Length: 441
Image 1 (cartoon, rainbow, N blue to C red):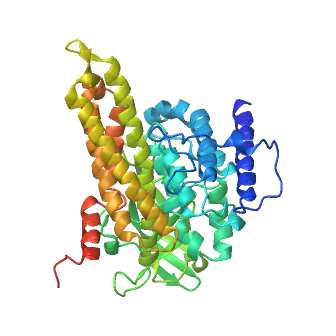
Image 2: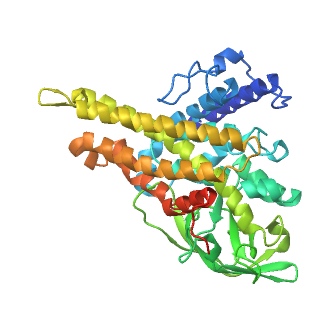
Image 3: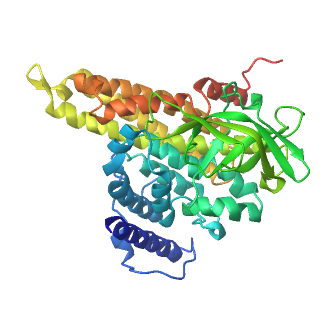
């Protein structure tokens, strides 16, 4: 009963947000309940710990962005954070339950088309959602949500047929289906062009054979956005994205992978043994999968940076609070110049990263190619997260080496950022390509 009441309240908040958007001609909404004044729903400041900006002075966010963040924060505080420790210990979280709550409130398709259940907003709203999800007290659950919203579905939303979007995108946005992304393989991680999984056309079907590794949501997913070789041409032109239901004969979950961090997020190794999929499940054009996936990576990398920026804000703030009350040599740890100077340096770096993120986002929603800026942000985000985690953990002393505090979980979870979604070295290669500094063949 408590969950049902909470969901109804959250739905009400989401509906009020949609009405707010309608008042600014962003979103057409014709049926609502429990409406209060706009001023009651818009916080005077962002819910993240780092900023005191209002809509009037924020670089890219408006009143509507803050209303969205406030509603999402209620879900996080009521339906997610109270159970994070339990889900971390269990090594998984109830994706279908949480995604349904988020879907009912409109958070799984913020920038997706209205006709398929989305809110029809621009990508900056996805960034606001990602930032707010950084307040979840672990990295695994935000990552799983990000796969659903900004990793497995952008190409489908942009290039998929209407029939395909009704079958896969609509229920994913509504939270009725859990999605996963199948790109990486045992011998092909950051080098996407080297994947070996094949989808051979036979009549009106593709027959898929191969395997995928590091599949987030893999043990719970209803369908996978699969990148496979559909031809024998050049490696950048022989790949396609295909929507594959995970319950089909021949789809095998080989194992749930035990990881260093991101414990609450299930990660699977998946094999495909003569899996028959209708050709109509192809996203866009055959042979364009590599290009579509590279486009998806822009959003994925920006999403990851937005999420970790909030997490870094929170870790720095919790470290300030802890070192203010923990004493050493008869004074608070924080009062030692080496400590408060270091924390000031770290917060400065976080603010610089945030500015790069907002610039890239502003350019992206105007239709610009932000591959270079997204790669820079991803590179800096991964490295800075490791720096913040290591420096802050040091100031927690022995407590930082236990599993009882958030900083140790952050230390484990954020190590993935420099690996997943394109390793640091790949980001450097992309940046060098745009700088025209790579060796000539």
